[in-house]
Length: 415
Ligand SMILES: Cc1ncc(COP(=O)(O)O)c(C=O)c1O
Image (cartoon, rainbow, N blue to C red; front, top):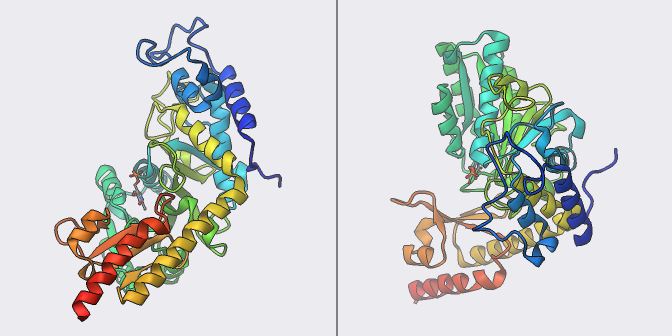
């Protein structure tokens, strides 16, 4: 199958974005009278500056397309059809080239972030169980690990469905014993429908759930219907490149949907969470009352900036798939270096071998050092862990002074 994801030259990127804008309505020149929207305020934001002809992202911001709705379905708002096409390419690249699915068999959209994308998934599955199995809210439960991001707690609260967190072992993955205990509890409480959240790199540890442990145990136990969502909000633009043998992708028939945030590892502007699911699922969150929106609205958010999709598209096309692998390999190499330094210093840490997050034992890191180097604790009141996230700006040169300070502390303790 032809790959959508190919590196483009800056000129090609510029041309594609401006051509897409040409296909959208133009508030500056056309009689568009019925929409509660316009270009950005012309008294505040430059409209005519010469640099704009070489600035496709900023030009898109000024033109202010609204990507309301879902554009992988057969019909959506025709005013912004040019830039919607590039959003569709983003979804296709993520589904096909990153998550190894057949690109045409997926729906998705650029959400406000990982929180929304995760809520969207749980909303879909809650409605799926209610509509297809006549499930009662008390018969549906979200099943996830104790290290799962708090957006899942928000979803449980908003959608009024129970949540069961499974304990994690020392390797920060779901503990099979507690998984069995949870399933036995469900038998007793009448829960029959499970929304499983598998983490592709957790927020604090970068740990990755062996998703087969969930699905094998659930099948072995019997008696449940389940849907599985992968939370790759952090790991979605990293893990698929660092772990070729990953099962957290669409080659695994049990994976129904994935969140991957471009505003984390892909360094896109905020507002670039990505939600992708297998075809047929997003239909369970169609708000038919959105009758003034062409094609109706299947998403949680409503209005959203088309410039966000353009930013992701430009980033992906600038690097291309090989460039992306190189980017990930560099971050991984720095992470290996950091872990080697910590091991030499005898400082305990957790790291998944395919990840770029290193989480340090807080008893070995004075709080002053954590504050000086912007290390993030698991708990601001009583930290047990501090994490280092190897992003583009976190070079070995930036980490070296921290290592030196930790080394000096070691020397003073041993003196
Ligand atoms: C694993 C994971 N899921 C979800 C989220 C929520 O993402 P956002 O802050 O973009 O809503 C985060 C944020 O850090 C995350 O790390």
